[in-house]
Length: 267
Image: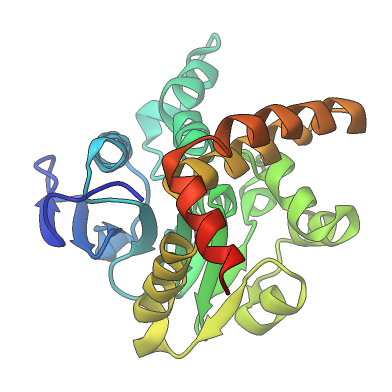
């Protein structure tokens, strides 16, 4: 675990207040903050989120992240203006690659574990955003909706990749092709959500899970396991075994690992 300068803190995004961040005991809670639109992703919010995640990764105060939404929803998807969706000659595709896709790439590539704490709707790109996180916890009000087909478009933000790996091919197809909402308890039964909490216990529950991860491991080990899952997703078994051997050999020599090994042996 990295040494922290302070145990508690607060950051506030200056780009219209679209992202707020609170830090306590090594856990940064990043809140998408546009409740009037159910936290629809606009360009300023996306930029602010990426900047905030970068700050978290650089901070000695932060070892894990909880991502949530203000008000009664997690995220209602991308807030696409007519100027954006009317783009021609590949400009819209370029916009998606430049602005939307980096959200999933940065979350999955971050060395920090990221937990999505979902209340209310996680729809369209909002559902995709939750799927990009390492773990998902849900309030009883949570609804996971791949609503893309309802507006005649395909999936985005990596949902075609993450969802199938989370719940299997046929359940993923069911969600995508029907556009039906998946409630919190079903999401847990299907393995999409790790836990379901009462509304007023959601953030405390998510932070407790993050704190437990931090207490029971080290920052290098958590980051390495994230990389291992990404590598193994497209690797053969032999390639994954060699990668595991390399990672183990590197980590076992670190001071943090030696302390945990010695402590584990004395239990």
